[in-house]
Length: 334
Image (tube, rainbow, N blue to C red; front, top):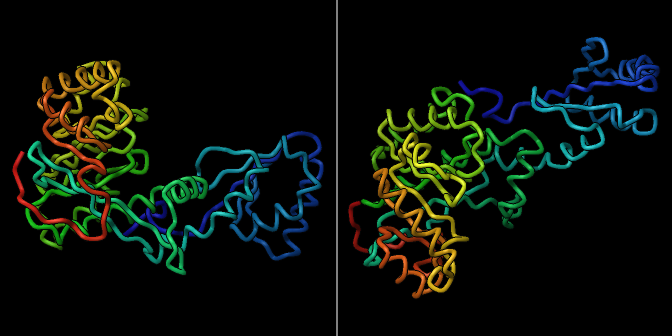
């Protein structure tokens, strides 16, 4: 059984009207919606309705209300200015992408110091109905606007597990957004079940925290990672830079892998400040028993410098761009 957040269920809108102007026309608005046979639940100055009702409400009230005194929210999320509600309607297309699972995964190699392939990062690729690509900088903001981050993150994880099942001995790094998982025991159940069904060894999957530096609720993240560990999976912290300034915080999380943000990797061979950060990161990783991984490598010079410092794993266009099929070379164990 899936929760509404993880599926593409109908969106419930709640609208709150404040101010003398808006409250004075409230009954007019309710009468109009009733004539249009729109079901509305009224609780004082708050109105609850379906998306069809919300569209009708906005059309009717565009010139009637003081928009600065009106807010809305969807499915109990944060309140937003009413004038932004049309953006939720405009991103309706993402529902079909998720429901029809119009995505595939590409494989980007992660290599060791000898350039043997150790793992692949699974990178989602989304398509419109006509087969044209939808870029991540379009789909994730749209999902957030429409309240579909839970559902999008779930379908991405499930698809990545399916694609990981065809690998041989290589590991698969699978991204996830911590804020899209409100209860690991419930939200991750289907992912665990699928991996078992496909016969994927838990130790071959590494769940990678996207935008580690932006995690606000550390306790929530620790709960998610503890659940993954309990089920036998490894996990990685992505995009780590200077934001995680204390060893204590990293020691609490104890990731199997730590990925140095590419902004500190590119041109590191010639940039003293980036070298300072890369060395600091490496020291942290080794102190807490994590495998240091540098991502975003595009040149031989940067690769050589990082390898000489003691980095163990590497990722970037220098070794291979994301591709529809994995490259097969000698595998190694770390």
